[in-house]
Length: 110
Length: 111
Image 1: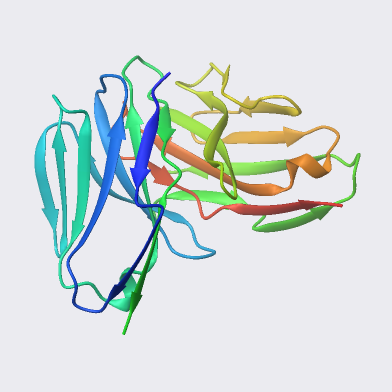
Image 2 (image 1 turned 180 degrees about the vertical axis):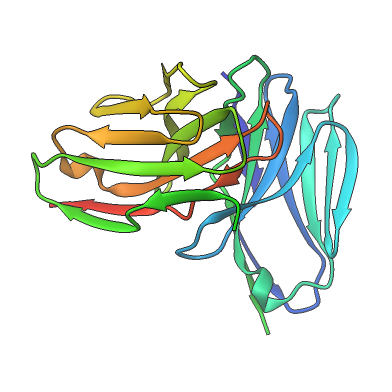
């Protein structure tokens, strides 16, 4: 079974700061996903990665397959970025199941 | 809007009561999933349906049953609710393992 570890568990930042959230996993994967969940809210898919780097607005996601590690970066953070960020992996196979990290709670203060 | 629709959004049950959580997607996704989310535990897979006509157990299937009614709909049934089933339930779908779409969740309390 793939183990997915995220760090930090909690992160508090000031508006405008550069944010990094890390994710590591134990077994080879077919894809890694970054998800966002606002307090009391639903879950939104931000990125799906199998290699390299993706960018969407102020969010950047990178993955290093050899090191089994991914990072989510937020540039020029804003209070509306306050949410739980969840890393999840597909370990392959035809059932496309996800294994989730426990999430990182990000609070961005104005 | 296209997406995953879950009903109900909130539910309170008494211990021993039964209920069915409904999930429907209109994106022609082949795979559908039911997860529960508990504080400190993250999201855990209850049951999944990799394709229409198939269902399989996930990590925490005890106390639940599912039905893949057709390609669009995947329901989760609690036959005899227990307080340990108090949780937030999410339905999700995907097409061949690409980006996942989640429903807005069902907040269930069993008293």
